[in-house]
Image 1 (cartoon, helix red, strand yellow):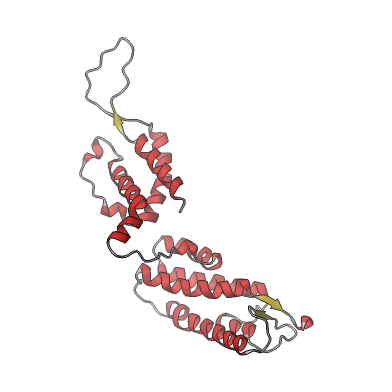
Image 2 (cartoon, helix red, strand yellow; image 1 turned 90 degrees about the vertical axis):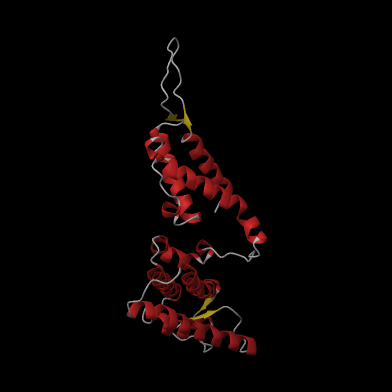
Length: 247
């Protein structure tokens, strides 16, 4: 997240929704106690469209966390204002809080995962359909691997087994090489590991979500599983395609 931009949007929203007395007209004395927002409703609604997305990213359950106490009759944006102040504080002080509370571990954001996986999962993830998001990310990875190798005749674990095998390429069966194919112990070990890893990702993570109805998993657990596919995606993306004519 671009924190400088996010804070600027939040500050703009808070300024627009601040309550003030109407500006007095020249020669007119007003005794009304009515307050109005600093910005007009068009400006506020446009700003709210942006800041709500920031709120969702920082405090996903802000709509239920921030209660409504009835003061919306005075300012309809009171719940948004409290959420804005909470999110602003979270952005500014999250590192300090984690350090002081003894949990200053590095954080992993789904948006930092490989684009193939995250692009496939994004829309479902943002609506909290985590199992479906993982499945969609795995499908996107499979499709991108097929596109890179031209192997549309095989899918998933079998696809990765065939493109990463240590065997030389054959006509119509190119290979992916992350390391030089020098048949060294390192190359053979890596190749064997990638094939086993890919099989594990699809057999243990992707397939259960596709073949059985299960309860939704916690977001943290889902992120771990999505990250597993991101690791595989980076290997595929960085690999060189070797065809039979290049051997």
